[in-house]
Amino acid sequence: MRIERHPILTFTKGAKVQFYFEGEPLEGYEGEPIAAALHAAGIRCLRHSPVRNRPRGFFCAIGNCSSCLMVVDGVPNVRVCVEKLRAGMDVRRQKGKGDLNVSD
Amino acid sequence: MTRADVIIVGGGIMGCSIAYHLARRGMRRVVVLERSHIASGATGRCGAGVRMQWGTKPNCLVMKESIRILEGLEQELSYPHGIGFKQKGYLFLAHSKAQLIQFQKNVQLQNSLGIPSEIVSPKDMKRIAPLLDTTGVVGGSYCSKDGHCDPFHTTRAYALAATRLGATLLQYTELQSVTKSAEGTFKLTTSAGEIEAPVLVNAAGAWSGYVASMLGVNLPVYSERHQILVTEQVERVLDPMIISLHEGLYCQQTPDGSFIMGLGDPNEPKGLDQGHSWQFLFAVSKKISRLLPDITGVRILRQWSGLYNMSPDRQAVLGAVDDVPGLYVACGFSGHGFMMAPAVSESMADIILGNTPRVAIDVYGLDRFKNGNLFYEPAVV
Ligand SMILES: Cc1cc2nc3c(=O)[nH]c(=O)nc-3n(C[C@H](O)[C@H](O)[C@H](O)COP(=O)(O)OP(=O)(O)OC[C@H]3O[C@@H](n4cnc5c(N)ncnc54)[C@H](O)[C@@H]3O)c2cc1C
Image (cartoon, rainbow over all chains, first blue to last red):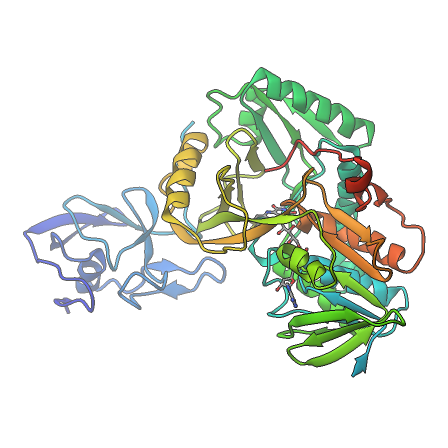
């Protein structure tokens, strides 16, 4: 199932693009929330909770609940339910509270 | 009219810890009045840093004792949840030679009192806090035994221990007026009725000046808003509290992974405003991005403010109010009262009961404003 309408955001469904989930190529539409593309691809577990390590999925959909925090292009804690998809994005399940990119 | 042996106004860290020590020393009817919930004042809004690195001897001694107490406080107060005391150090940044010389003096004083602080080079600082950009930093001082403690749990731990020992905590009960009878009893009108006691302790934080004025006492303190923010949580990357007196900035990562940071504003007017501003978010983000560039992308979750109760020499005001027998005050903490509470509350209880306190606090007495014995604390943010 593809999510077409969002409770608070309006988004335009752009061109079909490729992006990566855990390193595997997937397809989605540019401009839709990343979570919508993942959902359409059948991906239900977006992260594991930091303390008890329980699977967490798509939940509030409005950027509030922390259920869908993922690492996008190396940046932790991205709320994929409100972040728009772009071609070539690298989306990964976050481990723990998210690692900052620390420069040397 | 209800009678008590002592009434403490204010359910912050000071009021709750003084109540505990009075009850533990056998005082029977100890009552704490708190107009909202415990830790609703500065205590629950503070940066919760705890350090021994001070520039005056009394503060060093009080804080050395406070940290010793904090190390065993969970057991002392039988508080199984824990008070979140973490000793990951405090790192002071010197941005100039003059500042480094002041730090050297402070460290010398601290070491002479048995405090394990040290002067560190920018290279050492990179090792202690790899996240730190040391551009423009000429050195600093560091003490690995300084740290952080959860203000809500610490206050609650004291409050529960006090009530187990028989003290009464009246939350959502506001002191509205107080008079002193000819026999020397304080008669208080509160939002929940009248209550009287021969001893009254003013631990009302930012509102201590107002409470004192109800008895015609003029305390040399004023209040000042300080803003602070917390970010989302990330895995641990920063051990010590980072302090720049030059920027008026402090930042630490709490045990749960969020960064807490605050910035003093030299133009902040005196008053009781507890609002907050976008200008603060702007200013603090800009400064912290320069010092800790790697955390620039971390999202801010929340901002708020609290009130410092300031005194002329930025030192606490503690002890008896000579003009009004039976009246005691613990205020004027000038932004560092949370950390002082463990030691100061014990000494306050002893003074109220006529005992000699283990840690002397007479230099913090009100008489210093009469006889000119102010002692200015340089290491305040
Ligand atoms: C942003 C910020 C950061 C800080 N960072 C630190 C830090 O890192 N380390 C540190 O040690 N300190 C820090 N402080 C300072 C510290 O918070 C205070 O010094 C300390 O909490 C004071 O405790 P208190 O119990 O005296 O006052 P408060 O916690 O303010 O308690 C006073 C209480 O009295 C109550 N009250 C007032 N009037 C009445 C009345 N008429 N009737 C009934 N109740 C009344 C209030 O509701 C309040 O709860 C910081 C403060 C702020 C604002």
